[in-house]
Image (cartoon, rainbow, N blue to C red; front, side):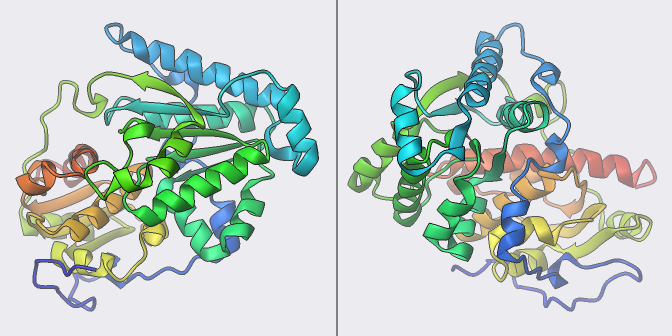
Length: 367
């Protein structure tokens, strides 16, 4: 992997008394725990379709609620992946026609994760069926931890598999996910996914996607696409990003917030290179706030993508970010923002800015 462009600070950097360090955490997650934790993140534990408020001027949002809810009814009526082998095959042939998956396509901040989590709760919490819920990287890591066949066997008993942030970043992921989706559908598992990219255009601008059109089109063929339009709800009527605090305010907030961490930004970036992205969620578990000194602009692609995953895990868990240095709407270079991963970076800016507003409120007016 590429090195962070900042001079790394060692993990044992001096901290304020009582403040934990994110850069000293290296969690190990047993494979069986990976399966058990395939549930919606804490931020979306209580959402439902009824709590999603469609914008009156964006009809596709109300259509997405109706489409996802109707798909959930199909899952509940069909029973999903409980029947395997020949039984599952005969069941599929007699089932009503329709794509085995639904795919929410739309920009960041329009509520796709809310809707996907609502579908999970419709099937599991209200319907009493089984489902798995994870991000794309969590599923690829599951295959890496269990092996392909064992991962299929772990997911196949579910009626529904939900995949948030579906994105193809390299040829290996493309071949892997194409095969995984095909095997799950063959066992009558229903699929639901969210993405910022139409399924047929996955991978464009990131690798030689034209060489993997068979796999990409096979993936696309599993889904009916539901478009969700709208503006990023996290910034409706709010500034793009709050002004950064100074180092003293960051340290003071960390010292006064039980469960907060305190690190230099460069140390965290260096540490992210040593921890697999699938473990970032475990790394920030039970963290009250993440306090960062000296946020600076990131220009390296690999460093930026790791920061994107960290931002997602912090946002999933409602963890405020208290920071000094560069504001988060300038944390990525223009070159990164205009490249093949543009949508990922914009999502991270949106989420980090929202968390920084929470952090500024935690710091208080004295900051």
